[in-house]
Length: 426
Ligand SMILES: Cc1cc2nc3c(=O)[nH]c(=O)nc-3n(C[C@H](O)[C@H](O)[C@H](O)COP(=O)(O)OP(=O)(O)OC[C@H]3O[C@@H](n4cnc5c(N)ncnc54)[C@H](O)[C@@H]3O)c2cc1C
Image 1 (cartoon, rainbow, N blue to C red):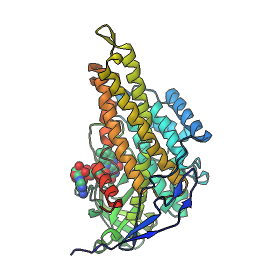
Image 2: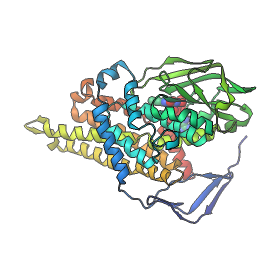
Image 3: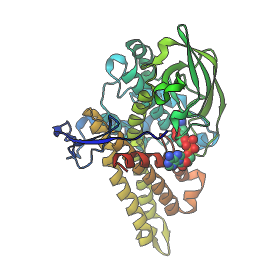
Image 4: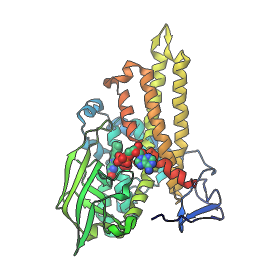
């Protein structure tokens, strides 16, 4: 049956937000079937200066990563090996707890500061898999538990997620439910004070090494999206198992896994949010993740750019540095321009969330543009280094493999375009 979509557009007063942003920039709100359709905060006044706190966290993260996160990443990437010690060091430094209030074991910083620290981490730490695993845990476990969890759940899980003793992972995708995520089939049936879960989850970042899983399952198939619920599932829950590790092209230093629920008994107290409101938890998690996960890519792109500039100045062919050839220098200029265009998109998300605004559309824009820039810059870096860029031992090609993942995870870039198109009422 076709459901008619009723669009209403109403004019609203502009309000002034924090950090140089005004809310409701276009002055209109769009409603479809009674629900507000999020709009981009484009065209807002923007403060481009980092605060002292942002600069401090970013610079300290660079220094920390250079001193404490350097190991033989090329060999570990080849062995596809996760570095738990590196994970723990990041937690001790404070990364995992950055956006979590102090009372739950975090650092109590806002997203604007967290993004600055993640940019520093991405610059200083060459292990893209480790940084990706930290992102996955923060945005799909810590933030949803903070924003949707009960007081007990927050006190039980957040301190461990912050201090590094718990690695969080996210079980949403299924073999038959990827972009069409709410067509998932994993089921959760209430039985007394437990839910009994059955089904599979796949492509789960950190799955083989994680201690905690936020997973989604259908509690009432007759209600569609309103029949999906979110659950917090510790690894040792009876009936839960990691079935296999899935080898992949990039971000190899964090393993990906497939999960199985076989009459898995999850205590009802582990329901995250209300029964039937799992989509809210998921959408919230994706809004934060899409907007923030590529903050570290800004740092990685900056590192790439610096290596390319250095190489173009020192590598000589035909009697001079290759950077003097316009074909080379213009590639590097394109890298620089893309990076400069990416930074405000990501920092805007930090400012929006710090000011309490919705960032659904801006997160989709940032994720789309930064991931495609990351791939383009990684390809350019290989071309500028020639064979030295293509071989494993220089570490240049690893960034390309890592960057391709970013066009797929957190919703593919085609799905981001659909989200943005909807906001334009297309
Ligand atoms: C490195 C990595 C880490 C991941 N980590 C996790 C994780 O921790 N937890 C988790 O649950 N999932 C994870 N995923 C899965 C990820 O969320 C899915 O891969 C993604 O949502 C796409 O689903 P799919 O792979 O099934 O592709 P499909 O949905 O099958 O899509 C295939 C192609 O069709 C296109 N397509 C599909 N529908 C449309 C449409 N309506 N309009 C336009 N194009 C469309 C897609 O864009 C894509 O190009 C991860 C994926 C990767 C690559």
